[in-house]
Length: 106
Image 1 (tube, one colour):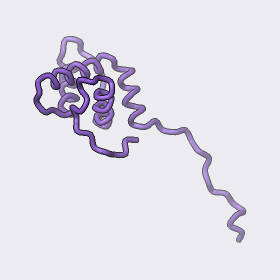
Image 2: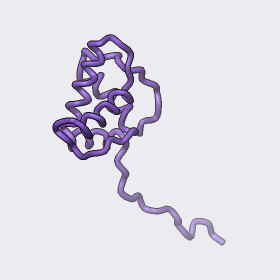
Image 3: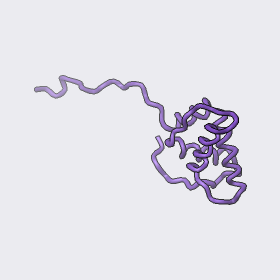
């Protein structure tokens, strides 16, 4: 049988957004939540104590759930490495605040 007779390759489908793209979309869709990330990261930096993006993320969740401006949204844990990078890129006072691991963050 002739192998070249049939082409079983599928045409490319729609591309799925990367985790980074979804993290950016979350920031755009949830400006109050992102303001909390920025605020709490700066507070942590001023304290001089070690912290992690996970700790800040959980504080944002707490504040948005119990705080005076109750917001209804979810924060994917998958976005955390991107949030740490975005914070350090956008705010020089936060540069080097988080330990960043080299990883495939697609």
